[in-house]
Length: 299
Image (tube, rainbow, N blue to C red; front, side, top):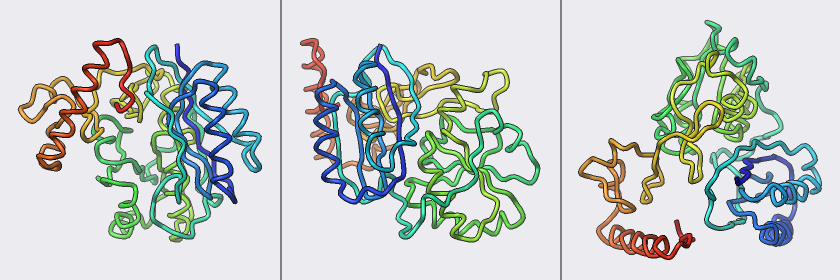
């Protein structure tokens, strides 16, 4: 079994490049794979490996100045969810495009066990901060879908819709909590006084809240080879379009627009013929690697 850790922490990183090298080297030695993003505002990522390997990476990050309070969410997978390790430097660990926000000035955290009571309240508007393709496969009952294609679109959506929420308390949620840290900080910067967000995100809710008591409907998209999880963080039967990296069902695979590794109904008109030729070559290499019992690193 592989241990998967989804983590993020906002803290000042004066020299991200100086953090990158030692962190990447340790993760490589520990056999850990996945993605880690380092920016002046903190660290974000999802990694997978052995129990000992994950523990070593987490201990290293927690030893960095300002990161002792690092929290993470764990799950398990029988197959390796990542093909390689990527440690990258970024301007933001989650890109919203709203400069000057103070991620320390966020909304009130609400624990998973208390979330149902909050979002059932008649004076609370519940907003899903994820992208439209994520919301499509699952969300909380009654949640508002901004139908954004990118997290960068959220400030513009709020500006166009804020009049709808004049006398409401705002409850926000996302996959693991990181987008809510920024989106609630953004709303507070816009003068919203009562704004809340789900601590640990949907993943913590699905882990902690019994299915019989749950207000969650559907699956939660995750950014690894599991594609989507449900209650108890069990894997759900979704595939992934390798061209646009969005979830697909068996019914989607049966559509005329679908070509494995090349296109689906969401992206058939997005990519050029040259793109699709490149995708077909990549898919060929994946099939060859599979026939040799190897993992294609470009997947």
